[in-house]
Length: 326
Image: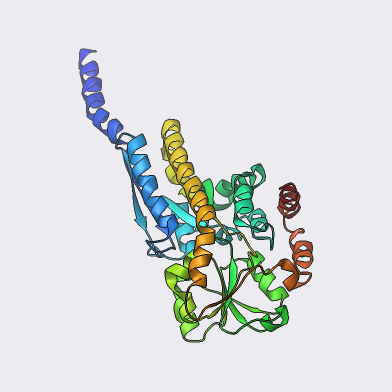
């Protein structure tokens, strides 16, 4: 009996150091945006918060600019646990979670402050509940980039001028439908390829936010910017379901709180800085900016889009109803 107790005591003492360090983790976070982008800045700041709130047990290493592949590739890596976290566009998740398409309803909101309200709403947060079963990931929180605007090589006088234009879009059926409805030719492609595609004439126009226009210098090859605010553009902070399951409930709370803090900081920064970014673009020589282009410019596109996508998800009506209260 004493011999058995001695063996158990020895085994336990050997396991204690392992148990003490089992929760130590460097979270690898994949992003498609460049290091200067707000998402990357806040992802790095999340690492500092995690390190502090975990007493040094957690850290973050970011992989910007699609170093780990496209959004679909990173999603696959999350599913297997090869990647810990990723900050991905909601557009990239719509194929797996159709309800998320409602967040890309055209002209859902008029401004970025209302876009922030949508992403913090119970209705939007409910959509995250579908992620574990559909993607093998846990959606920790939403953030955003700026509102989407239209940027074209040639000046646009009416919606009819968009007919036949080759528009780079973020790959997502809901976004593709919008552009097809006014006769454009959507060209899905990764963010990292857009500048060269504009430069070599592969595309005629882009659907983009102010932050990315400034960071990538797209105005070098597209001299007309229309302030349309036609889509809000969310991001979802994801963690691999496999990685999540390995965390204790206490550590899950720490990770979720840190992610939420920096998702909120990302949203707040975009809301606060949107007007200044527009002013910066207005000061660029050779760039023509047309402000306050309303949904009426596109005719009945909202009604037509809603008629199609309300069949796919009830959240189109839910979000329209919510926004009507703002």
